[in-house]
Length: 484
Image 1: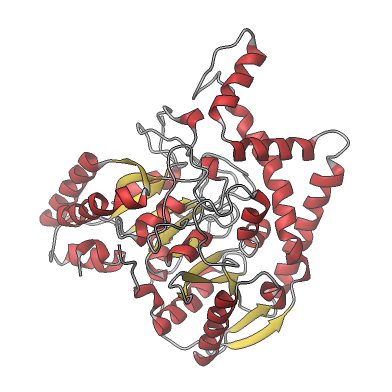
Image 2 (image 1 turned 60 degrees about the horizontal axis):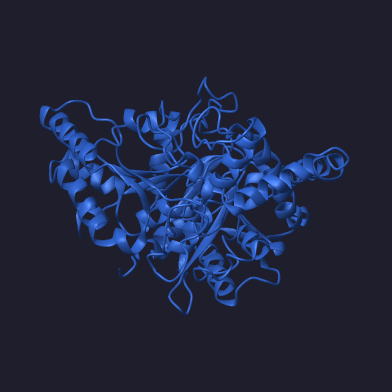
């Protein structure tokens, strides 16, 4: 097995046992980048010189016998809407094409403190708005399992980089499923923590009450290990909370005593037949592992997508008001201030961003605020209560991550409503704020990955990860890699 194909925990142990060096590990990742990046287009910027310097420093610490941090010498990637000081941060948009970050996001600072080596910034849908990474202003990332298909979005670059073994793990952001849906499409693990477990400071805001930094890796344990490195309260983010640390190891035990809820709403019309078959097989596997399967209803989850696509654009219209051509980023000339605003945004923002700003502005406008935004907030509260009640009866809730496998590039690009349906099973976790994870659950007849989606109660990630890890070890789908 090549070094870049190791898990984070295997690589960490190998470094500590001096079986290989961090320099060799980083070199292996860049060898894979040079071999596959032109086909996959996962990265917007690469930092080879810096990464090799960081690897050399890690090797010196190891040789001296210094105390090592948990991710010492491990090469990772970061989505390009997360600030990395003195590096360009575009958010996938022309309006920030030349923006140089002046400080580190809290999660980046924590990665550094944990000894991780950031090898590059990954591609994304512009301002994280999209489900295919086709909305990037710079390039379209391809799915390593089928280069004619999308990797999902908006964290498609981070997920594709991990899937193609160009790094051992990555950070993404998840507003409505943006680390989980692409993980389903590319057979990786995508973990969205409870809202508030991870600081959002330095994450370029899309929809602040939904956004959460998530982790992408090749296994449940690796995704948890990355989360352990970046979680925790942050005085710079008032929504972050002090929590018990996430577990990083899970015993290979059966699931006796665990109640797994299966909502009937997750298996309605529109679910691809192959995806349905794989998910039903996965549920049977959980039952074989000792879990009790509980059929249940989440009647208001059907409104999750509608709530999300009213509240999210409303927050987008507010958050993106700062990109005005005055303070930072692109600035186009105009005869007056209003013309500067209009010219800057017309050139800087892509069609999907403009669409969501318009939708949000309308929903917040006088005469429509209560009818749309106000009512959506009320339904959001109902959905949260419904989840709280559900988790009094079950430990985790499972279903498909996405209704279909990865679709072909261009197939849904001109039909935004159909594209939005790609998030139908993931958005409710963001609406409610509960933790969720997508893990590999097999393949369709066309050898396209399928993801199993799990949700748990607030800050109960450990129980969710225990179930995910037990399934993962029993099925071993996570060991499959694309043939690039």
